[in-house]
Length: 195
Image 1 (cartoon, rainbow, N blue to C red):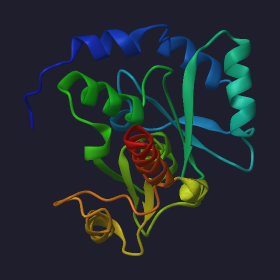
Image 2: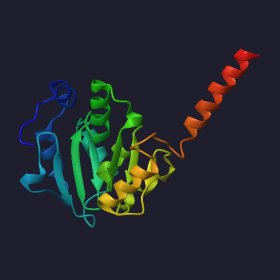
Image 3: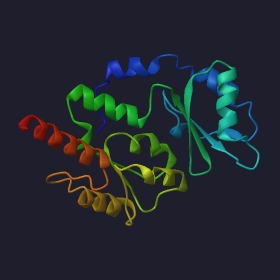
Image 4: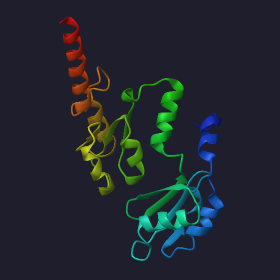
């Protein structure tokens, strides 16, 4: 909605060592990078378009920032966008911040995404759904037990994920070996106590 309440503790957290003017100055000197239009910019996000035929690789861009003493996260997505955000920011960290602040267990939060800028959020300890129309940057998340790759696209993929985790009833995590191991060790401890 139009009205929202600013979380001052979050703002203070992500504002630490955030230097957007210096970041713009340094990165605009790199061939193949250009600022996206104003509607894509915010106080805590600098969005660039990238020409991959000319621009250096993301690792080189990160190195250039380090050489200038800049601390920030660089998020590459869809092969043509580059966002720079405070190093203490990101969708995954913000979800953990709110969960901790309001007392929500991460295991009871379902999130969904489709592109590289969702990677950090999807790789956390929440339940995650990668919808069927995802970009290839997320392929590396297949090894995560709490990341489900849906066949369906867009909202239908989210609904598929809700079913996969049985999210509206007793939540299950079919591929989570840590849950099985935890359960087994608790059982073994109880058996040892009975002996």
